[in-house]
Every structure is written in structure tokens, then in C-alpha cells.
Image 1: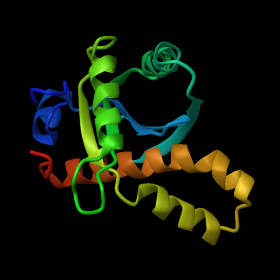
Image 2 (image 1 turned 90 degrees about the vertical axis):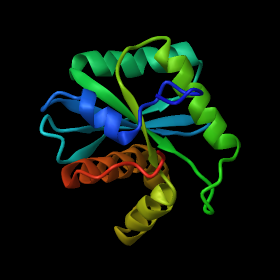
Image 3 (image 1 turned 180 degrees about the vertical axis):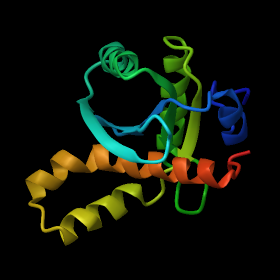
Image 4 (image 1 turned 90 degrees about the horizontal axis):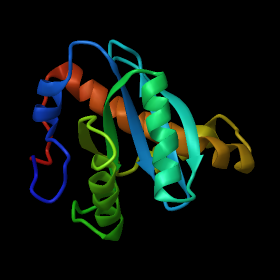
Length: 164
């Protein structure tokens, strides 16, 4: 485990997960938290919900409620690195969220590089001819799905994280 966050490397994350069970992916924005969930076999990520951010406790109450309802076994947080791979204020905010969330749950957590996730999802929605209002409604949970699917694909290939 890293000394400054309670988040596991991808290799450690994979080691602690049972063979089957759902994961939830998070796209942490300043105003919303997009959520996506995997199937039990961890092959497909599906958009789940967008939480409108209010207070940390209220936001995580809803997240943890969904984790309990869906018997989630781990969390994947999108890590918003700068395009050159450096860490900016949004990365620090994500790490702080992870540290605080670790005080409320024992679910294992891993980061996944989310660079370009929102841009890719927005392009897909534009290509699908979604209205601006509909795109705004969908983009966060779809970005979470994009993040989670990236991690699921890496797990299927047996890869390790480039954050190690």
C-alpha cells in the first residue's frame, strides 16, 4: 500500500479480490460523482448512477449503500492525471477522497488513469447525436464506466498498473 493513500496497486488489488464479485468505478468531479458497476465476472462495466455532490458524508452514504445493495467487493477511482502524467490539484483531491473514504469502508480500492475518459465519452455521445442536456446527464456515469472498463480489461489480460 502507498504511504500517502489507502489505495492498492493494481497487482495488490487483484490479489485481494475473490474470483468473482462486482466492482464500482468512480469518476470524481467537483459537482458530481459518476458511478459504474461491473458484472459479477468482472468483464463488462455498465453506467450505474450519478451522485450530485453535497457533502462528503452524504455522497459516500449513497455510494456505500449501493455497494451494500449490489454486494460490491472493491472500488476503482479514476485518477485525473495531467496529460504529461504529472499530478495536479484534481489528483490531490482524488487522493484525499480515497483517504477519507477508507475511514468509512474496508473495501479495497485502486486507481485507474482516467486521462481522456470524459473526452472519449463526450465524443461518443456527440456521435450518437445526443442533445447537450442529455450528454450532461450521461457523461459522468459513462466516464466511470470507461474508467472501470479499462481496469477490467487490464485485469483480464493479467497486467499490472503503471502507477507502481
